[in-house]
Image (tube, rainbow, N blue to C red; front, side):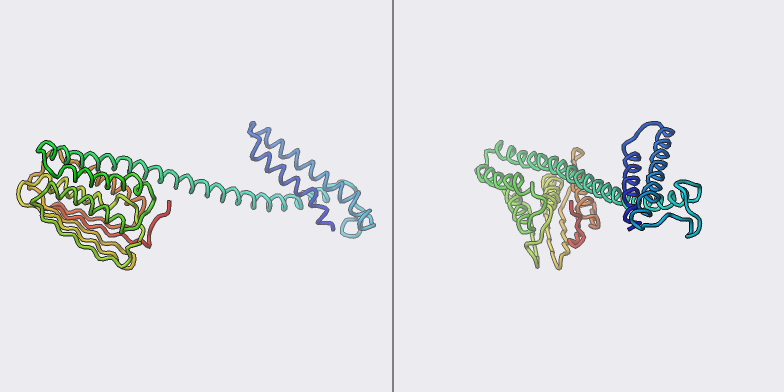
Length: 309
């Protein structure tokens, strides 16, 4: 009963000090004076409750010092005991509250970091989509100048691909089967223009429903056409191999290139996709080999190690 009664003093003291600690932003000296005033008030309240209420009315006895000398309302010994009793409870409550606040702050920081990464991914995709459209429209423009009969078919294929870019690419993840279907549609557009291209596409997946971030794999195919087939004058080739086994993706693309590529070649798509891979699959392995007559890109992603945004 004694300790229960003391809580009437200890709890308000602890939360009064917490309030002062968080809300009062005056000069340090005034803040410390306020702390001292609260503590003195709490000690006096503690002594009043103990000496005049708990002992005489609850216990029905007179308060004594160690069961011998009758205790007065206030002296150095009882004041010190009351102070230490209160400080222990205040320290305990402070510790619990500060730990709670740190956990809340940690959660908020984690959420802000996740939102920031999500915004960066959205920005990267916004850069990639116009880049893809620019390259494809350039292809159609070249065909239109030649008045190629296949131009309407290419436009229809482009409509299908752009539908994917607008709707599917807006999702955080899609099935790898859908992503590969989009790659095949893109290749159909390019094959109509590159008649002499030798293209080999192989895939072997044990789980077509495996989720992957959209617009990653196709960027390497786009670069293979942009910096390979579109710049090569002789016989050109692109070899694509996709293997998915037990949650591990091995994706490789090999394409021919001119020994002296055009000076205006740009790789903004590859730069952006590197950043996406860093954000989404931090343990990925990306190898880009620039040989005399070909590019070889190999990407390995362990889907068991995927960062959630």
